[in-house]
Structure formats: structure tokens, C-alpha cells
Image 1 (tube, rainbow, N blue to C red):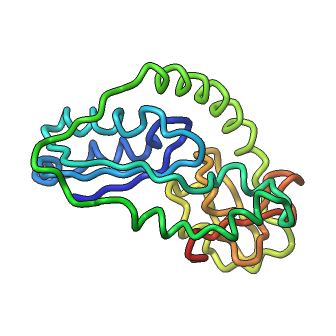
Image 2 (image 1 turned 90 degrees about the horizontal axis):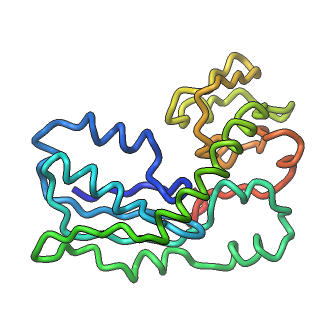
Image 3 (image 1 turned 180 degrees about the vertical axis):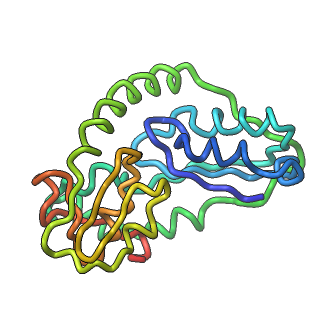
Amino acid sequence: VYFGFPVYACNPPAIVMEFISQLPEDLKGQLWYVFSTQAIYSGNAIANFASKLKSHHAQLFGYSSISLPGTDGLAFLDKSSAMVKKIKNTDYSLRLKKIDFSPSNEPHWPKRSAGGIILGGLFMLLYKPLERAFKKKFYADDRCTGCKKCEKQCPVQNIRVTGNHVAFSDRCILCMRCIHQCPSEAIQIGRKTVDKFRWKGFDAK
């Protein structure tokens, strides 16, 4: 089983950990290769995920961390900023090609690091208040076409679209998928994301 997840505050997202718990036992017991994507620092995200797998008697035969732009901060950047230009001019697919996804011959379990524990705790202290504050500020402006892409892509069913009206509930986990994937760039977090950069992925899809 090859499984990838994004890193949130040096940890796997809660919905990813819940998903693993709900897998059928025969799938949990397979051979696993795990990879994460993160912007700044992955911390102990893979180690924490691996610990969850181990508790379900899985075998981990490899893991990788891949550095990609962090979707949380990008929506607040000016489209003409130096960082955005650097992101646009970077071929992130090359980073994927350099990773050896072939499994090792022996089980390979990552260990938690002290730095990951400390920084992970600090990131979480910052992340949770931001999550509570930002998720109250989501709205769709008059550019919304009612396409429902945001509703269909939300992993926690936090969005409902009726006509051109977009309603946000309180289950948001700040995955930022709706704001970055909106075709008309109508979804905002307050006024600070209006006409700012949107990240469509390294392949622009």
C-alpha cells in the first residue's frame, strides 16, 4: 500500500489518522510505503503515522518526505511577489522523480526526534488558534458561479452551495483546497486573500 498525506503543524491531519483506523483489517496488515508533503518541516509526522500503522500490525517498508509549497500561507501572497515567482519557476515534479519509492527488504520504522516533538508542539500552539480564527472568515464573493467544485472537494463536508450562495459550517480543518481550487478565485478568508495567489499544484491541476 502506497499512502501519502500532507503535514499539518508537524503532524498528519486528524482525518487521515481517523481514516487509517477505519480501514479493513486485511488492508491494515499489508506492506506499507508512506510519504508526506510539507512546506517547512515535517517534524514527527511520518513517525506518528507509522506508530498508528504499527498498532494495527502493519509493516512499514519505506517512507519519504517531499518538500512542496505550503498551501496555508500561499493564499495571502501577492501574485507578483518574489516567493510566488520562485514557486512558479520551480519544477516540483523533479523532486518526486528523485525519490526511490521501491520498498526495502526489511521493515523500516522511523523514530521520533526531540526536535520534532518540541517544534511540533510549538506549531500546534500556533496552528489551533489560527484554525479557529480563520475558519470563521471564509466566504465566497460575487465572482462565485455556483459550480460546486468547493463543495465536492471539501474532505469534511463543510461547504454547501445553493445557487450562487456558499455556506461554510464549523468543521473546516484549513486544508485550503476550496480557496486554491476555486476556478473563479471567489473564496476568501476575510479581505487578506482577495486577488492573491492561488496554488493549483505543481502540475497546475
